[in-house]
Amino acid sequence: MQTESNIVQVAMNRDGVVGRRAFLRSIGWGASALAAGGVLPVSFTDLITLRADELRKQRMSCILLWMSGGPSQLETFDPKPGTEHGGTTKAIETTAPGISIAESWGRTAKIMTDVALIRSMTSKEGNHQRATYQMHTGYVPTATIRHPHIGCSAASEIGDAAFDLPHIVSIGGPTAGAGFLGAAFEPFVVSNPLRTPENTRPNVPDARFKRRLGLLNHLEKAGFEQAGGGDRVRDHRALYTQSARMVLSPTMKAFNLDEESPGLRESYGKTPFGQGCLLARRLVESGVTFVEVRMNGWDTHQQNNERIATLAGQVDPAFATLVTDLKQRGRLADTLVIWMGEFGRTPKINGNAGRDHFPRVFNVALAGGGVKGGQVIGASSADGSEVKVRPVVVTDLMASICRSLKVDADKENMTPVGRPIKIVDNGRPIDELFS
Image 1: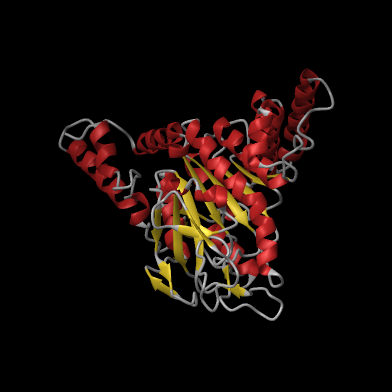
Image 2: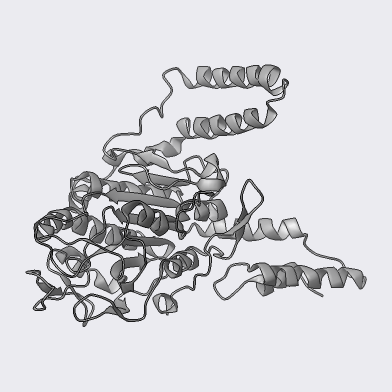
């Protein structure tokens, strides 16, 4: 007879998540046992709840370092010194034997044993808006549907519904939204990590604030809800309840960087991006599922080398310190860190000493979350114009993110019009990242 434990075990796929077909087969076996006179030990709903609770207890999280504008692969993690298109950028050795990266990334070079590089990312989207959408959602934009940010999808699967803070936070500006998942999973935007988010403390005592909320609920129920606006009232009430829980929560102290030592803050870098990375670490420690930290300025059509050296001066120490800090605190295994932008830059340097949009081949860096560091996946050609070995498409990257976070990439969410949409459509996890 199937027991609760072995039904759950059989239903799990090799990545430790419940596959739909395997899940239904397990339920079918249980139903057969019931028809044969046995006792079905767990209901369909109970099994879903058990698995969801198990995932939430694992507290997997992700920090996305978003390089807005499209960072050049040749001045970051796939340099080609001495070649026609390599420019003046020199390469430096790293702590991982055989792996060299661009010279502006000295701090990152020291943690390369924890970092995996994908040098063979490829896509067809060379427009900033379209490529940004795809690299955040795994889908190309359409006129009929707004797909959710991969972080919103992850939060909807593994985020604790009773958690006080938002499940997904974007530091440094707005990002892709929750799409058809709805307002409950919209990213919370922190414009400046150096200040506590605005409008997150009541301007009246807590008791009075709670009385005001009670009055609001009473007025809505007695008026608008009874007049036929029940759905809107429920949505509005859910939003206010979530916001009020955050405002009154002691967990809001996670936003206070003054609790960190001056030395550690200096190591991250006294820049908005550096302090944003420190805030991201504090947030995932507090239970936030997904944090994006944004760094603008990578659209280097002019003076590419000089501008990237300046940008790397802010990102390099923050990235390296974040990985080291998470590792020292025992959180790196449970936190996936991703460095990426929407595409790469042309191998050929233009007349303005810059590089233009180039989605055909670019690079991504990952650390933590079960990823095996100290390795390079794929390769670009000698002139950097195409993928030479092991092409990786966007959906493969998204499926790998799901695998790291123990989210079922094949899970279908229903849109408001009744259309099932997979978290990731037709993506295959990059097995080398995890072996």
